Length: 157
Ligand SMILES: [Zn+2]
Image (spheres, helix red, strand yellow):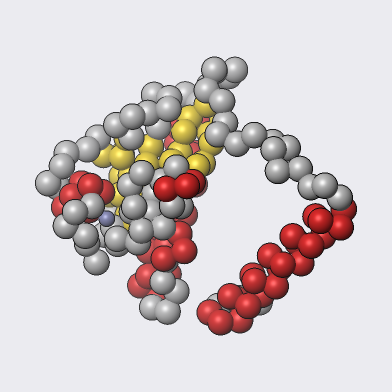
């Protein structure tokens, strides 16, 4: 369940200190040590799942843990807005090409305040389609893959 070389597993185990926001049997929330903005929180499962594609869905306890992670992301976002933020960005990276530097699933909950200078990481319109047909082709391919995975995992639908 834990990877001895993983910095987040070491934080979970208490071997590395953190500024804790919340902890339960399944999840941990703490302040990012390189915050985009003050109050930038990381929400992680206490199970070593490298990225979102690795979240197992066969066992009820894994599903419960994943649900608790998403619930805590919501609660942290609400808490930041109740305290000082006027909005939040929820960011989550999978794989080095996506900017993931710690291979233990984590969600960044970044408070936004008014018109602060922090820019979102995405560039809207960068991946503009050349035509309606190209866009439809992407939708068809992705829909087929989604349907296949849902059928394989037999959880919803
Ligand atoms: Zn880990």
